[in-house]
Length: 205
Image 1 (cartoon, rainbow, N blue to C red):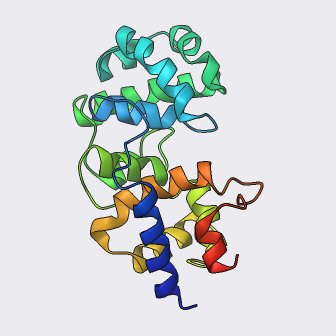
Image 2: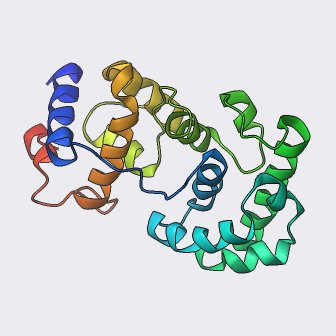
């Protein structure tokens, strides 16, 4: 099956399953989204959503995060795992936002990726979900599914991202990101797709 036909089948099934996917990380502004995505590394969105209300109650702004004690942040986010390093990076990120951007989250891939603890995937999530720019963030779910479904042969996330951007319309990138994450969790986890996975069944994966 041609890649274009595979992409069309995938998009049709994803739309059928998740017509209006919700953003999984709770947030009220770009600052909260940036922090939540940073905390989600090697941690579930559910766990992050349990942690961030208390964190943002104590540290409601970039400035307050920049001035916070490492121990306070570490204790708030302990259940997310890797809390020592994440706390240090959150403080560094907030301090750089204060020094370079007046305490505002920048609307720029380059500026976001220059922040401590912010990689391309995190920047892509923020650019799309906070600012509405077209982006196709690739996490482990999407990387796995793109290769499993024959949409990409890329051996790293940037190559997979480029292939997915070519396979789908620019206006659909953001919603497809959410749909693929949800599908990966429900039907196609790392250990292998479920027998009931209709996409893998139709693609003869």
